[in-house]
Image (cartoon, rainbow, N blue to C red; front, side, top):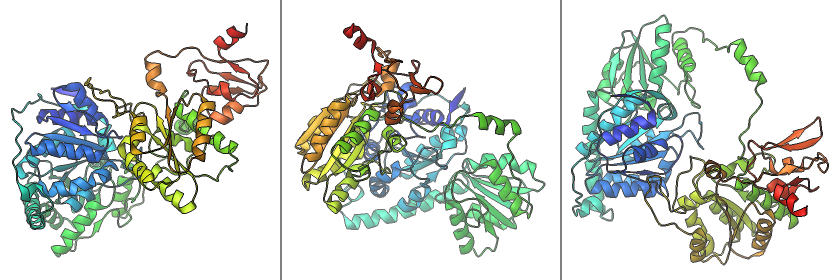
Length: 616
């Protein structure tokens, strides 16, 4: 049966056709849709989000120890969080197949870094598989479960954005339900890492297993050689599509080795290929991982075949590969001039007409109120604009870095806002501010808050609770109590949790109420030791989808003087300045009635209908 599927959907189909019982992970583009698709397609599979990637991998390991098949998904930086259990899990191995899907993001399009997670395969001594299109992603993940159970090791399944989010016709099959009863046998040497002798033996077992997997990869159907010629191309993943596109347009014959197994590298296959060509170029997305592995093999075999790639400057070390970059690398290899890509004149003219559209918080985003209140509170406390560091975290609220708010000073990994504030409170001996979202707080923010309480550090933590994991598509988290599959879970009360940790000053405010939020922040800044403010208001998008927007404010034209304070203080896209009338207008098509502009207008020129009716 053929279906038009996105790569992530194809992966979900392949996992369900492999008979998985359990799927989990933490939402992160470009991997998110895999879990969502599984949850939608087969409610019998326990497909739910975990608080973070470490918890997800450990839960999946527990399922796999019991002989059932499981899947863990995450984006590239998520494997950093899961790296701790990954290393020990490699030693213990698994019983039921366990696949760890990690979506790398060359570009990057939506990630903090362009990290290449193939290196985790080398570090953990685990096999890594990588598909080049949605169909191979579907087929390869089914093989990944066979590989995992045959050798009793977890398998790293590396994808990149172009596979995850490309749509194509995919041949799919029937979902499978494996009739297995969970069983877990006690095995101290295998599962208890406190045994040093056992660790040494498991390390030997893992190395032996990796050598056996390498032999299997030599004849694997997902690795093949095509074409004729004395110039070789060794290619892995998505760039294989670019090679297939550009090679027919170049007046030269190429011999291509297409790989889906960067680790362990099938050495004999690579050596035989290198012996058949005069030179070779390695084409891959990300770091020069495959190029380095190929060069090691060539050196060990005493081969003098020149090998080119990213390390030789034929391809860039940064950014995502494109057909144009691949074509020019091949032309340079042939001693020919690179061909520059010129945009059609019509495209250039159209691009000039298109206005610049920097990312911005949605109209009605509660984070706008939180940061406006924070900045105003610090100003009212007589702090200079850049006197108190404000640390940000991963989420929609990172957009507060842009004008007009320009609030946060840092943002790079989950939960770091609180840890950075902790450290700087010690370094500077004064109150430092951390801002963190609700999902991010559950992911990795609780531990640094524990440390702040334990050491009585002088920090103000603002938990921006918009009741969802908004940036990745509104997934639930422990603070919501709900589930996309309809399962009912316990809702973790953030305020009660924070108080239980020992924080003395804890206050929940509505960020739409600027005055109350501002006053709470001013109070918290006077507290010696850790203080927490929970700015609680649901993300506006689900509210809009439920049709719960009520009245909208309007501008009273004879009161508006065109000072643009509402625009300059909020940056709300619903506020539009009209230069012809020297007045501000409110776009009713996108305004959500949050009322923040109403509270900030110095001339009382923005009113809700209900306010006007009361006066009349």
